[in-house]
Amino acid sequence: MSRRNISKKRFPQTDSIYDSYLVSLLINRILKSGKKTVAKTIVYEAFEIIKQKTEEDPLKIFETAIRKASPVVEVKARRVGGSTYQVPVEVSGFRATNLSLRWIIRYSKQRVGRSMSIKLANEIIDTANEIGNTIKKKEETHKMAEANKAFAHFRY
Image (cartoon, rainbow, N blue to C red):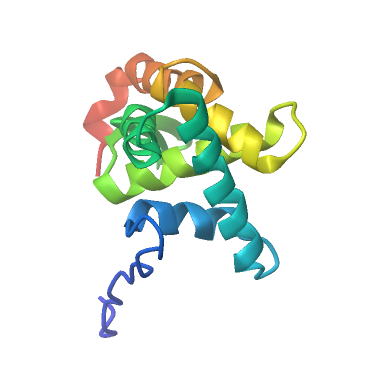
């Protein structure tokens, strides 16, 4: 066993407009080359587009999208003997949020559109309505875990 201290998880500060940790996590995931102001403008413009399209609070829609995109189980590779098994493992809350943010950003980048803020807004709206690529990815992850349920006894 290591004698080192276990590092504490450091959460980013809440963002200035919506006063939410989730929004600041989204901004930090979009961040490229340290240009935080560019990432903030992308996210805030996306939230304005969500507000115009749905005429509801964009923060609530974003939170429902994160909740609906968060996986419950995932598979992890586990080496037993000479073969590797895909073992289903329950996902912790922070990792589930992290995965859903990552998937939303990845599939919004793959969308066809003019600007990143429009693509991000459309992906968040689609995820909140339980359609789109992010929800497909979640269901695919759950199907993989369901198919490999026989190896659940290798859990660690």
